[in-house]
Structures are given as structure tokens and as C-alpha cells.
Image 1: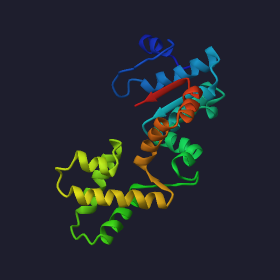
Image 2: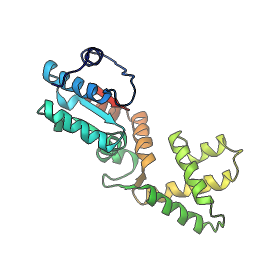
Image 3: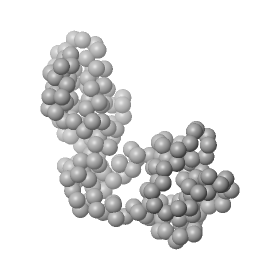
Image 4: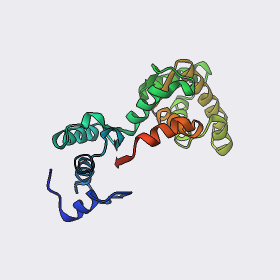
Length: 214
């Protein structure tokens, strides 16, 4: 096991909730990795009960690699970015939200192309409308707001009626295409957990040890 300093060791060993605050490059990821290894190797925790969330794909790959060096079960843990985790859950549970498990995930480029298509079909001439609409749609989804709710909350915004109309059409076309954008991955898992207790309990009971490397 990699040697940790005294402060890092204190964060690695205790059971229960732990928050590690430190600057960049101070070894937070190393502490989380060693904590997971400690749970498995010293406490016999089932690796299937471990969920580790990272901010980037690179960090996820690095954590997997580090854990593979100190445990023989890294492949049985869920180690991924938050978006990848949500996508994986939705592949299993998509039918509860009216999608099939083979749903497509739109990239930012795909979303931009769809919004521009909608703007063209609405015969809007302002070249900034699509860019503005994309910003508002992402803002609305990150706040968990439907088109109607967003229009109500931000009725004072310039072109809000147009933005809401584009947002509605965008959602309709995504659903019809059995597709989600990146914001939907987070929003739909949140919606799923809020509306389906059976699914929520399934994942709550499975993942007893959750580490978030942000």
C-alpha cells in the first residue's frame, strides 16, 4: 500500500462520512483510492458495494489503475464520472421513463445541430437565437425546470416565449428519437429516484460506500 502522511492516514481509516479539503496536487485522489483499498483489503467490504465518482474520464481511469495495483477486484467496483454513472443506471432503468435501453446520448454538437434545425423550422432569423436557446435550455435542465416552469420563473427574460417554445420542441424531438443530452443524464436519474422508490432503494441498498473525487 502507498505510504500516506499522518493527516492522510486519518482520513483513510475512519468509518462514516468524511470530507477531505485540500489544494490541488495535495493527494486527495490518493487518499480516496487508499481508503477504498483499505475498506476492501482490511474490512472485507464487498467491492460491488463501492461507488467512486470522479470529475473527468482521465481521473476515473487513473483511479481504476491505482486500485488495480492494490486490490484484485477493481473491475467489480463502479468507478466513473457522474455522467457515466447516470448513463449506466439509465441503461438498466430507462423503461421507467419511457425510453428503451438503447437510447442515444447527444453530444453538445448534436444538441446544437438539433436546436439550429428547430430555429430554422420556426423561421427565426436572429443568428444568436440558437446559441441563446442552448444556454437557457442547459440552465433550465440543471435547475430541474420544465419549459413551462422556466418560462414562469424567467418571464422577464428577453425572448423568453421563443426560448420556451424552442425548449419544448427540443424535448419533444429528443424523446421521439429515444435520445438524451448530457444534462438529461443527470436530470433523468434525479427524476427516476424521486418518482420510483423501488429503483431508489435498489441503488441505495447496493452502494454502501460512496467516494466522490471532485
